[in-house]
Amino acid sequence: MSDAFDKVDFRSRDDSDTYLMWVEKYRPKSLDDVINQKEIIGPLKALVRRPQEMPHLLFAGPPGTGKTTVALCVAREIMGESWRDYTLELNASNERGIDTVRQRIKNFASYVDRAEGIPFRIILLDESDNMTSDAQTALRRIMEESHKTTRFILTANYSSNIIEPLQSRCAVFRFSRLLQDDVVQYLEWICKKEGLKSVKSALALIYETTEGDMRSALNMLQAASSMGDINNENTKKVTGLSGKAKVAEAIEIALEGDFSSARTRMIELLQVNGISEHDFIKFANDYLSKSKFSSSIEALEATAEADYRLLVGANPEIQLSAYLAQLAKIGKHSKL
Image (cartoon, rainbow, N blue to C red):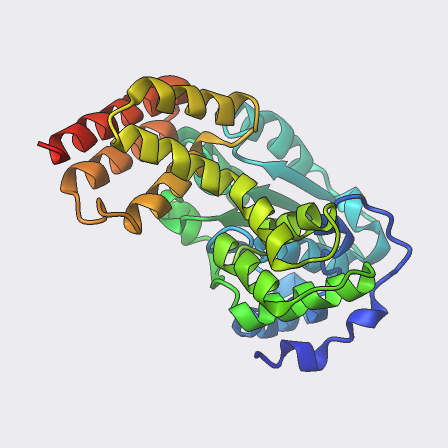
């Protein structure tokens, strides 16, 4: 167990929050509340104490490890109660083109604030590794031109997808996956706050399913709570309904050679369940890495190719259909 829990009194959190989503209701509001990541929190606290010396920031690491939460904590601690008025938050997966950079970001960054106690504006670009190369190049110029009035905080699952000129203009902080003990203890605390009984084995199953992704763990915990207490039976029902499990089913069907059924599952996941194409590939890769195809060069190449084509902006449904067709072909050949 990390000593993060020794320092944080969770009871001090504002109980007046009325968010329906536990992800927001229990999102840390200060750097002191952040679970683990102590190698990152210490240096950031030093920067927050001297905001004028703070460079642009790049938070890189797996999903659900606190990158966005920490960015919002930084904004809140530097600008106090008015932080929302001086912070622009964009999800680069949805607004990843050069027009967004030239219009929304440039306009916000060029505005000069004279409010007392506001050292600069903050632009938070979530999932910035999904921005196009042209958009990243344009962003580089804006970062140079607006450094006196604006600080950028970029988050990315894969820092390798951020062009080097952007990385070189940022202080890079690398987030690590949360440890099981930390996540389980936090989930236990939430269960107590919500008046739920829980068993550690059920909470451990949530951790194993979400692999250290706190956001997914909280969503799964809330889903399990709708069935009653957090026990093994209710938790197993929820983990079987997770997007990760459903993608695994689609990949398994494809590898059995049934392309048509796998494609139907994929379309349902994208259009009905709302799973993003990038999550589909990520979950597919997770499944393959634990299957008998983990050493299949053809399967790895097909996954890498699909991931690249999605990154450069190809049509998701077409590319994922082609990906499943490749897996179906691989699966059929393995039976010969």
